[in-house]
Image (cartoon, rainbow, N blue to C red):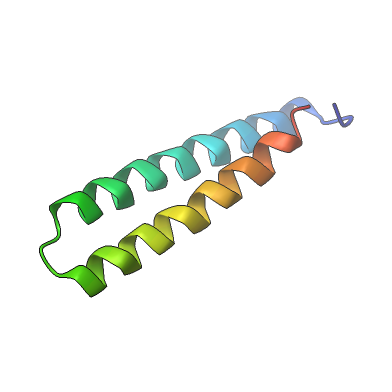
Length: 61
């Protein structure tokens, strides 16, 4: 793990939580969306937030 201060670690954990929430929200919206193009766009956005989440988690290892 990188040498993070407690403040940095807290900020990182908060951001990881925010990204996880965004993934869930965009995936849920995509499931409910009747328009195929909008559904694909929402899934793309969810994927980008999933990538952000995965990148942030690497800082904990």
